[in-house]
Length: 367
Image (cartoon, rainbow, N blue to C red; front, side):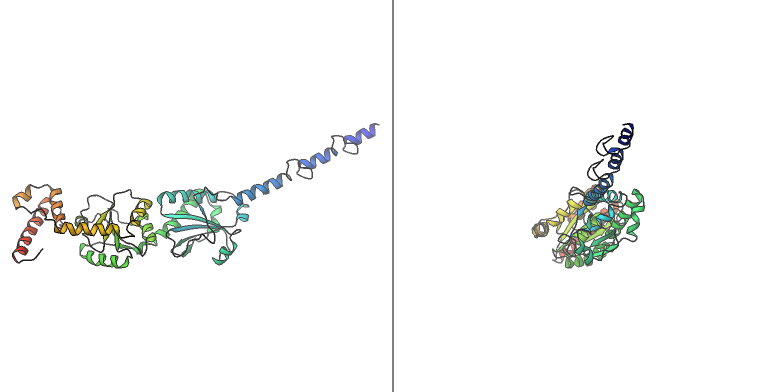
């Protein structure tokens, strides 16, 4: 009858809208038994999305390296690292964005070849995180030669904008590079050259010093990264501010110029002719490990010593030479024209050398 029909419309026995009536349909739409949105409803779907994000905070194709117990930088590691310690379960509950900043910085640093960026999920690497005392997450720290330096207030990064996050993380990575400054000899005066070359040679396992001539007044991030990478094996010497006297001593014609000095002798040198990048320079420096390159440089220097040098002409002929020719002549004789600015200064230096050479020949010894 009509009462039963109304009962059916209300969702009672017999169906109405079918499958249990409208009340059951609303229950399904809300994500209750029977589905509605499928797989347990919208709440479960959101949970799955959080779990997926947590599991893939940094994918295998990411510029950020996944680190764990067997693969974690120690005192022997070549590279400087910026490390993101995090909990995947906690990150899933926070607004996304921090990992984007980390990946952007990782890409930039990867192109420079100066600092590597890695991440440790403490949900998966509990033993490692406990051994490193990583309880307050997220946390960032740099690691160089096994020494860790944490970033103060790392946990507050989530609340900052993308640009500010990048700036803070980049500054922390840069500070780790600047901390390597003690590994670079700063050569200022020609008079200090023998002492610096001696120290650099004795401190280097490969008996090689890499000299960097620059017109800048601060060390580049590439040089600092290399000084850490080859610590103990190779010494690094920097000549800043377009130093004229030292530039002439090594026949430097442009900046930056990089050359290797073998065995503490400024006569046995190997110039670098590639791109100024950490990766290219790193490959070049590695070539000196077996000693072959320096052996060839020393043999070349020995041969050059036996080869008759270009005679130094009289003053009239010197005055007719171009400045480049005068510099080349002095370089061939292993002489630097300290403080020379004008062509006349180089002419006077060459004339002085000619007189000194003549006197040494008269007394029977080599200049």
